[in-house]
Image 1 (cartoon, helix red, strand yellow):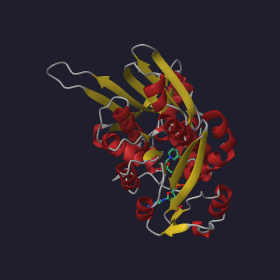
Image 2 (cartoon, rainbow, N blue to C red; image 1 turned 120 degrees about the vertical axis):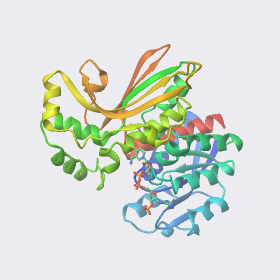
Image 3 (spheres, rainbow, N blue to C red; image 1 turned 90 degrees about the vertical axis):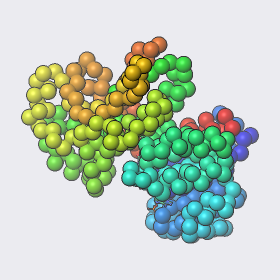
Image 4 (cartoon, protein in one colour; image 1 turned 45 degrees about the horizontal axis):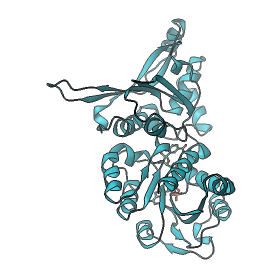
Length: 349
Ligand SMILES: NC(=O)c1ccc[n+]([C@@H]2O[C@H](COP(=O)([O-])OP(=O)(O)OC[C@H]3O[C@@H](n4cnc5c(N)ncnc54)[C@H](OP(=O)(O)O)[C@@H]3O)[C@@H](O)[C@H]2O)c1
């Protein structure tokens, strides 16, 4: 049996989802993967970092979180008010970094990841900030310290895109990708295609928890840009800066434009796209990257992907088009991506 000591940094929606999966799937992991995971530490912003060498009790942690009581009420723990100090002073094999995404400077996630990788600790993360702004640096750091870094759930949550391309499609050359990579905007556009107006649907999406109180990151296309940056770095190995991605949101789309598209047999979607542009002696190779609304013909598989679902079409030299459709967010859906990364690390370690 392989034993893995896991540290969970960030204990919100996704951190709790992963913890729940580790608890409910414990026997499955032992039986199918010969893997025993002990959650040795958990951290959040309000209560700091708690550690127990023998393992924290997941039902107790989930109960504390759901009743908004301090994590420090867990018995028999060592407590560090400073999360970085906790990370540097305790033992772990893998760190799951699931603090909030910050697309300005990727903090605090990037510092947590740097500290872990520098100590040779493997990292799994759903946090888009570090992956979007510093993937090349972080993968290099991982290599330098013989650590693994896996970021599956940063794009389309647990729906496997990155591992499908890098492992399942190994050897194929990806020529281009086009996707619906933001569930909130797809939910809004799908409802607008059914005749509803933007403001009304946004308010409904906020009430149902699909959209944040401040929806800017989703509706102005920044979240989709982050995923484009991640794919540019890990699939095309061509890191881009945010300003190199053409960006358009959905706030300017009217019901009339929607109706006109429908009348023409099309659907307006917020499409994130990447295209490899090979160099030709006088010009350097580059990647064209865009997030923009496009009126797609119904023959395009992306046109029929509605609601909060995400989808991506991957164009390769050997397989031609491969389409992946699935959830792009959610507590267990994102936890699943982290779990798959954890299993992969344990297998390769
Ligand atoms: N939710 C999804 O469906 C989804 C899907 C794909 C990717 N993601 C990504 O996954 C990450 C987590 O998302 P989420 O929905 O779980 O967010 P969330 O509910 O807001 O949770 C974030 C957690 O990070 C903690 N935190 C913030 N600053 C910290 C610090 N300096 N040290 C330690 N902990 C800190 C917060 O502490 P407090 O609890 O004290 O505030 C909270 O527990 C984000 O980067 C997000 O973009 C989420």
